[in-house]
Image 1 (cartoon, rainbow, N blue to C red):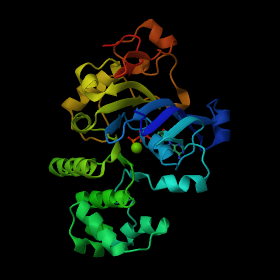
Image 2: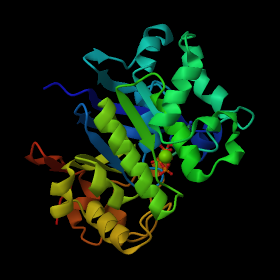
Image 3: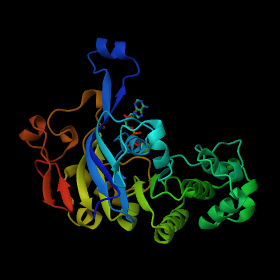
Image 4: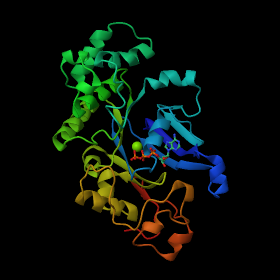
Length: 322
Ligand SMILES: Nc1ncnc2c1ncn2[C@@H]1O[C@H](COP(=O)(O)OP(=O)(O)OP(=O)(O)O)[C@@H](O)[C@H]1O
Ligand SMILES: [Mg+2]
């Protein structure tokens, strides 16, 4: 079966804020926030992207929705190449891929009522028939009462705001929904409600989810497949059960042990590794994780590890795997 979404060798670059200063200090004039990433999503399933802050998760998600241009590589969706399309050509595809943004309250315009927020996607796509009926159905989909149409974002709890973000994403009945940190900042019980809601919507509407999260407990419970990102690259990828059972990359093992110990939804991991995440302006030589790795060998300093495929369900890049 062809995947619904296929990301092939995607590179995304950003210019340095101050190119002249960068040049003078010998730094590169651009960074690769995403540095050659490939993965595929099967329809109707949930795929998780994990990795520390700054590893390129949101940037990749924004590129899939067409909000950020890619430098090279290809993105295919539902049998069509969508990377490099003009805005006009991309327009019909925009209905099919929706994003729930990382900061739910911040991404809802404070001056708009829930009604206006939920009416927006219909207006943008020229749908004018029965908007109130459609909004009522959306609120029902996400388990909120109909009278919420009159509320403003500041009158919503974190969980309710998240539900409105989900409702807005569902408005045009997309095939793919990208959820950026959908449980961050929520109480554990509300997190559970949110995950159940997403699972119910997946069953009911056949939605494919790309979930971005710091919370590996969430990944384990909802995602069939996952990718671990480090400095804009996938260092380990495959079936979630397989990676949890036998993680190979030393970064993955560090993340797993940290996540199982610490607050699972903390904004950053305290991983069992040395030092800080390196800057994208100054990528380490060899394996880019080596300066932090407790298991490094000489080769790790000089040679970037090649990707090894254990099976179609598991690949990783590490010289001295677990
Ligand atoms: N518009 C931009 N211009 C320049 N650099 C950017 C831009 N957007 C993101 N970056 C940089 O790209 C890198 C990846 O950022 P990104 O937001 O994708 O990370 P993330 O994995 O989503 O992190 P978090 O977990 O904190 O949300 C970071 O170094 C960030 O500073
Ligand atoms: Mg992010």
